[in-house]
Length: 282
Image (cartoon, rainbow, N blue to C red):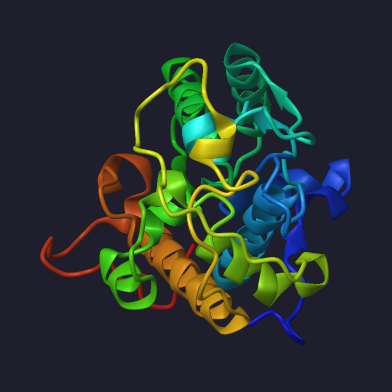
């Protein structure tokens, strides 16, 4: 999917004198990740590299600009990231992350872009990202713009996991598991070791434990199973998420079409939106 394709358009390659007109009415994609332990077989950069990869592919499909990825995220939690018992995780507190994201998005919103797409790659970032966006919305800084923000796994259909991932543990426990391992085998096999740790008792979602026994809740930081990981599965998953994301943005399902973007008015709510005749899609 990535071989031989033209690089995504980088917002930061533009000069200050060009950026306003260059992004007017266009889409900007921002990957948000983290530096977090991912067991003995994956690098600390998994959440960052995957957010970047998904954002680049989505931007290519939408002829959009990308921003440099945000590398520092929320703290790792035991039930979704293995916690801070394993070295290498770099994080900020939740209130700090909200403030950083709110101010970053607020400043970005001064550009006359039509829509912002935020692709999250770190499980613990999601509530803080959504809170920051809502605070920016309340300030009126997103008026006249469309915003799509999602964690990449949120776009994976149940039919995909049912067909491709036996004994799927839930996304909270897929940390360093078969999906992230497969994606990394496809995208950056040079960073993946030969180890394939399995953890037979993934943690439950939404349960906080203290004091937590990391040796029982993880296998060296892995929350589920890496068995069955492959580059082929990673490529298939990447394609699936990119297709879902581009369809989400192009169709604009759930948006207030007439109020935000007049070109998005539906003619029949039972049918998917298509681009106006002779016009460009987002």
